[in-house]
Amino acid sequence: MKTRIKEYRKKFRVTQEELADKVKVTRQTINALEQGRYNPSLELAYKITKALKQKHIENVFKI
Amino acid sequence: MKKNKKQFVWRYGFALIVILSGLLLTYFNIGNEFLGFSSVGTWLLYVGFLMIAIVTLQTLSNKKRIIDERMEYIASKSGRITFLVIILTSFAIMIIDGIKPITISYSYFMSYFICGIVLVYLISYKILLRYS
Image (cartoon, rainbow over all chains, first blue to last red; front, side, top):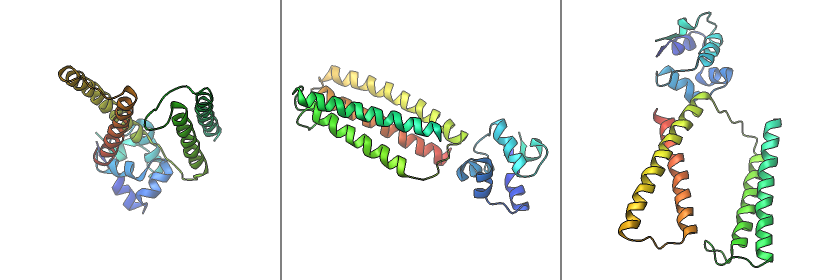
């Protein structure tokens, strides 16, 4: 799965650690998501979308 | 928080039961030399106090632990790997025992086996967490 997490993180100047704290996962999970090594659950995808101030999940995650 | 408290009560309770069993076995002088200890009772006492020490350290530690969905997913994967390893190892042990009977005592054999299982689980978990 392709994600734009890194892109939005840079845009809003949020570190992996800060994003991880917001969505209550580990920094390693955010790293794995950014590198496309892990496909998140719908709940986590929704939380990350909200944390990155986006309205639609499709803006952040692409299959 | 409430759930954690309940977990610790259960763990302390289990450790106390182990210690109590150890005391009873020692008092009634049941059991012979066991796993390098003078008797089963002594070994149970040792394990019980070790449990209490570990649970106390866990209680005192304020380390914030996050268990997220990826960790749970990897844990289930390493559980599957461990299960496969158990089956293959058991098969290998059966064959080895058929070729040359294993004379090691059951308690020693099982303690090695359990240590091996725990080790396989931990190693596979760490590898998967790092590389998958």
